[in-house]
Picture 1 (cartoon, rainbow, N blue to C red):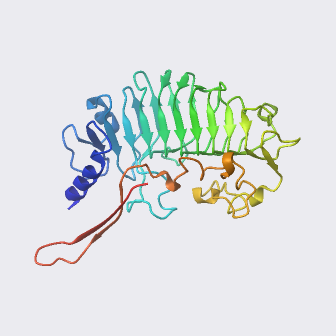
Picture 2 (picture 1 turned 45 degrees about the vertical axis):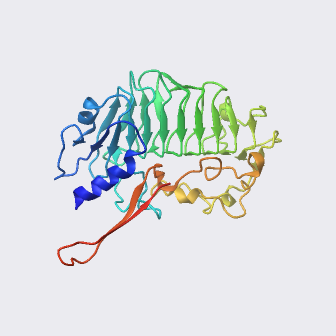
Picture 3 (picture 1 turned 180 degrees about the vertical axis):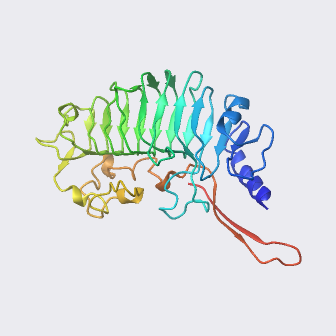
Length: 332
């Protein structure tokens, strides 16, 4: 039965990619298959070639650090799966203590991973060499760190507990979109696009900023700007006169469905949905809402990746030796 379910899952996803799909599952009792099913990421990565997809399957056991030295697609099930409806029927995530992009990893894509240590602390995505065309989407992690260049890349639909800091990574020609960021955003150049995010630690405004909700934290470097590349944002705690369709508000407790969405001891991403009368409503470019649930690719609760997922799996009563199975499938 389990083999049939896994076969169905693979058939549903094989059309999404054009390279070998490999699985990593460290749960006790899982049958390993030579070159296809592995107990750890290092073993799967060792036999993978550029363009292969590696599925990190749900588990209560942390997968350790993921070190990428080739172009791979890594797919996990998402995060906070027990907090929201319409998530996979298996509420376990695929945790890793860290993800590092190294030589030859340019072009890699990471989806649906929870980057967290065994003691529950969120951990980092590390850029250990200059890379380009990296996608980090639908992931939950602390922050992006390193001392190298991060070019032509995407961070989207993620939940960051920490910062995006220019002191750690030099980001250029990249997109930061529809992320919940509890820390600050500081980028290296004005060729980056920062849009439809919620940023609680302020920003340096050296890039193009629009449709964001930004909390000013009082640091001079992170003061709000009248730069023409900063427009249609809602800023909490800013002073002075807004320009370029930016909007300042002094009532942050009316922005979201809960007055304080940052419940650090029990994070829930649905706390960041806009209140019906939120000052961030219709303040974005073209009259759309500011924040993560608007724009061309709105934030997806629990970081569910854009692949088919099984939302329900039910067994019926045995009849004449047959076991009826009902499976519900959804794709975001």
